[in-house]
View 1 (cartoon, one colour):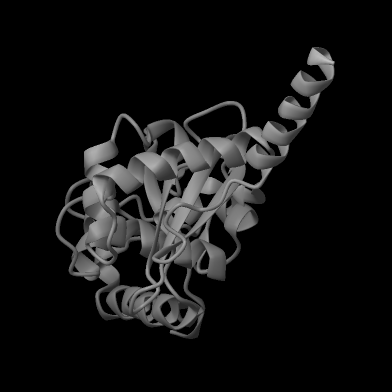
View 2 (tube, rainbow, N blue to C red):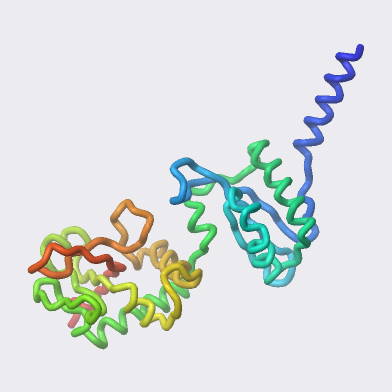
Length: 244
């Protein structure tokens, strides 16, 4: 009889665990995601917070970082939503429950979700800024075959040699990180959230060419025919160059 009571109690506890509710459901939508992240060899988890307040803004964080970066993430979420410290602790327990019970959505790339990407219209408008910059100052983007690229002085390189035409197609242009930040009028570095949004938006829309298997979006290129030195560039195909 005692054994039967224990079994019933255990079964009830199991049902209760599976029915655990979102503790901040009145203010937040909480979704667990599962997929690849470049920091880890195995697939891992991230949690997406979407506020139910005006704007429905959202933020996504790796689950493994929630406790270590608790204060930072709590502050980020309170920029556009409302979340008390005690509730955030409860949310972390809820996320653990989702993970244990396999309640998640699979995504191919967690990093793109965490960092976000620019919209289609935004990506096109910003890409047109790149095109204008290249066409308005062609001397800043010498061809590889001219051997006139100067690191620190040139803004980029036109990939006109047979090797790179075969790899990226005609009218491909490599742009340095510094030149790209300058063209976009962005301060800071490539690690800024806005820069990541823009470059990933370009990648998704096909404006930015990426063939290497590394997570970084720059491609390795030898910009001078007289040297074997490799530099990294963001590669774009600018068809207007072929109309000059």
